[in-house]
Length: 415
Image (tube, rainbow, N blue to C red; front, side, top):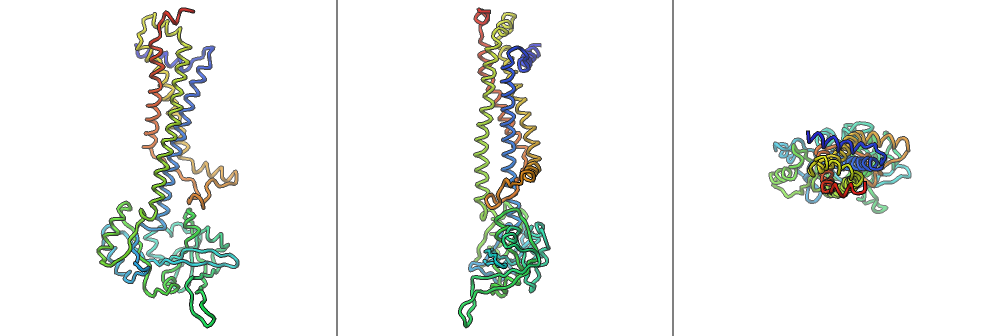
């Protein structure tokens, strides 16, 4: 009965409809403050998680899990190295590649690019470039036809489409009676891809590996071999195993080394944002202190009457702890519900506002990713909700203690 009595009074104080409606308004504001802070923190953490997921997926789609390259930029025994790599149970696929720099020219438009020669069939197993083709197919990169696949941003800069012919100019020249002339070759645009990362969509073009070997005069050599492994987080160890088994001096790299700064900066940003927004939740939670202090002052006579009727100090304390807990729990649950709903639908909501307002929230050349991703982790939700509830409960202790120490005679002296 005691518990029911204390909960009933604490609940009534939250929903008080007395003439002093200001106290009820402050209680509602405290609930709303906690709800907004919890919602914002859940959404922000989901967006950061989304950036990390998208960055990893898109980077791995274009750069492969690991690579082995020749020390001087040329690898002669690529076929033997691929067989050796595939013999490793932890390597799922391998493909040769040729990397080089070039200048693309179309009419009056000029742009520098990284030119990558690939074997289309082998490359589709190693990376996900085939899945991001917007126009055309990767398999159209046939040896001897001199076709080229461009990123959507690069195609936009050059103002070219499928079927147009672009001139590929290399810095390496050829000696002629008129002097040293740059080597050039006309390529036909056979496809356009879109990864969604400006770094690739703007600066990377693909050609057939046979055409690249002719263009860069590599004969049968390649720049290196790209590997796809069964466990991406074990890629550094796997690529070293293959390189050591090969027995020759080579350069090894993996996705964690090439883009470690991206992922490290995301983790740092996530930690900083979490701390800052937890402070916001703390401020919102400690609003409960001011709310309960005002309630205690407003209910002095009620407390005194309860004490004279036999209520113990611990019962008075429980009443105000109950009131503060209801405010904290209601605000936290409301913020969790709103945060989950918003995080799950954030991409659609942002897309709607971008289409209505005609603006782009993320500039691709600044943020690398042109879309605003969201990846909700329920572990983050549980952590945020737990901390918010703990802060809310801690905030009730002092005002409830003050109420429990109220002397009935002093409170009723002027009533």
